[in-house]
Length: 272
Image 1 (cartoon, one colour):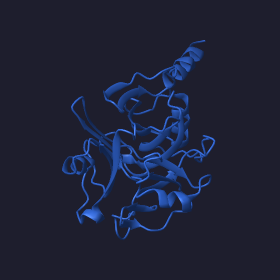
Image 2: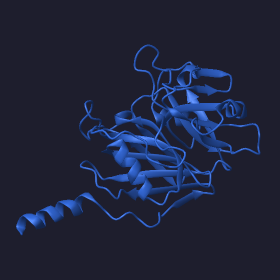
Image 3: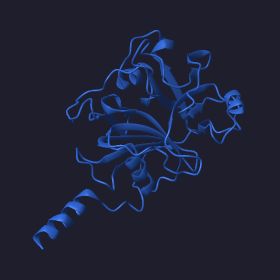
């Protein structure tokens, strides 16, 4: 009987009931923030998920690249402060050999091309800054169910990374034992863009399932970065937020990171 009670306690400590609604804090029209307790407890840190919900009708997205700026890598805070961004996150993973400024996927910002080659395995491209006002001003393109040659002509800025859900919303990340902090980019049914950050480490497949349990109405979800390089920075009169990852299997297996790491490319927002 004692062993059964211990087992029940362990199960209860590992799971919480998912919230039926999310308590959003409105920072201003078109910009909302929430900190949500994950319905599945991580073995490390507080299991909280930070979400910044952005309406592209009120906020413009900017891609800031070290290569375009002819600059050294900088932290998310430095990129945001120097470019007067209200918030920013990693744009995507970047090459760890050769030119560290180059994204692992297709990346273009106006006339500047960081990486001209779409990665055939990534499938998602965040597109923004369209001159056609009849189009969504920001959208995560799924290359498996949308016409890329057409979309490519409709927008001016692009950043490609790994697709996490298919066009029907199904979790398509291969299950693996590795886990880490992470930062993601999402799009909901209403066309809002979500910056999603979690410092507590999770297996990626499991974390997608966790987000499915939350009332976020996600239709697209794109992986940006994991481990200590994961960054979310917000500098708003109603919210100051500095979030950076730490844990990564086989790299930094601890929760000790206390600073932003320098990164080459970020996606940020400013008022229209």
